[in-house]
Length: 430
Image (cartoon, rainbow, N blue to C red):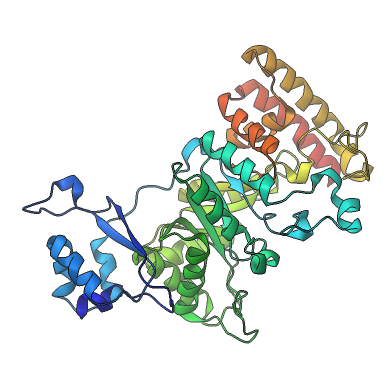
């Protein structure tokens, strides 16, 4: 009975479907090699009592810890060693905020584009088939880190096309390619996925339930990173309960690392210290950073991240297209028919930057003996600043640009040139 209760997790009706074996900690065992001993993580809770008991017979060295102790999951974390430092394979990720969101150009199900969507998005409209093709290009190109969240594409939840649900589908289709997920939870009063509009989210339990919801939609047992999408100043229970819930989630194996989103230097320092009180090192801070939006570099945010050893995840590294060099004063539509995406007010201050982007792209193309686009240059500038870009990808050709950008790097002289013109543009806009 103790073993059965030990593997229950909060508020889930889904029963044990499978177990995932991963080398997290090891014990000496008379029958198994050291490498074979592993920490077991489960997807689905409230397992029937005979299952953990059967597993206990196979792995007695692991399960004896639970069978001889009070089934208190808070104590289970003491057997899990500190995780390795947070790293992103290839140094590049992908943002999925637009996946499943009609308001961002996504076509739900088999629907056709409305007149309003055609007018706003034109050829930028995309659907699940486009995303599936893009996902395949990305994982085959070793871009395997996907940033998602419980509110990403929530409009598509009924069609099973919310961002997390789409990622689950594409992961199953490409099961031979392992991927990592980062999920963002919102410290809101209400659960956005609840059938009842009055279901409150509060305390540590609210944090755990939010993360479990994302795990269920992704159909995984854990994720690499959980990010807090706000300060939690109005959360029921306050920021300390949020921090305690996040620490407990890491302790219970829901995630490997904890991060925050859009924290300035002051808020980052405060939350870093708060998480330290719970024995957890803050791993990341997701902020907007691009050639055309460098506020995080100048307001001390990225300096604070470096000081505390917190990784910078760069959201909108192409600034919605403004930093790509595709949309310019002389070509405001990017060569497409329809309404210009940006007006003179946005484009004129960056005219010199767009020209420099094109010149650098030509020089790199000559040096690398292959075609290098201004999009690739913009992404590599973000990488040169020590950040991990999270470009939004909607179609396979977008994915190819992301993958190709990993095959080369900017020189220091090229970075300095881009810094000079981009900072001049920034000053002109102030």
